[in-house]
Picture (tube, rainbow, N blue to C red):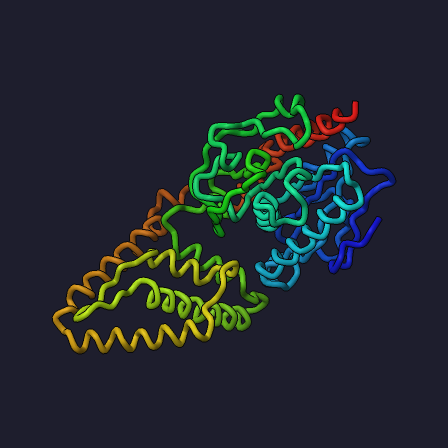
Length: 390
């Protein structure tokens, strides 16, 4: 057993190295910094526990202990804002994957994660697939994500493989056992509340993104920009009491609006002799969502200064050419109309009817049998990997 660098915990390995090591990351409120890494609890434990029981000689597992917080409002979670909690989970995942790969050179690693944990695991999977993760793609057998807040719009169960229900084989295996596994091919509309279009690169076909229609975390309506904007603000907030929440959300709101304004001024408004034109490279909805996204860089002081200087040029140009104002205002009105359209689902009762039982759907993956295929997949992976040595 060795220490996972910089995280204060060790990955339990041994006495011998397994064919497959499964790393789990629980959802919000389901873990803590002192959580037992071998306790099969929560939704993730309900999947991994039966795998270990079925093939105990082939599989070892552990769960990442982390705050699992949402600003202090979720029972069982830490007081950390959601973004801080996810960032910590990702750092601990990196350390765990690195440690397992170093301690057991022939072992392949799999990941299972739920909700907040799935966001951290999805981030790791994208980096591994891009060649920038803690281990190479050839060391990862499969990744199962449940209720992933970063699910891409309309993503199939195997992102990048529409229509495919059987995962790709583990690296270096024939895939004979995995060939008998079939994940759900049901198409779920919408996307994660913190969606990203980034793909899984070399891990495509070995990452499953499982979402229940009506689970707001992973199937949020497409035309609900302000919902995503608000979710990003609250993910960064201290929500322990009304005053703390008001202050931190207000700070985040001002920062995001300043970022969106800066981006619009610097990128979407063009100056020409005798006129000004609003020619957006991104919509207003895309600008405000990006400005609140903690995964993206914030404007620098130089950016803000440049935007202020450019705004002075814009106002001076319009003052000198008042006949250009109506056309400019018309372009801005069109941009505003598109922002309204990008939030149309927020006022559509039929859309919200889908989410009437969103809490039950978010918490019901085990009860609805949606873990069964994941259990079968991991058992098949372990058997295929073990078959390399027979």
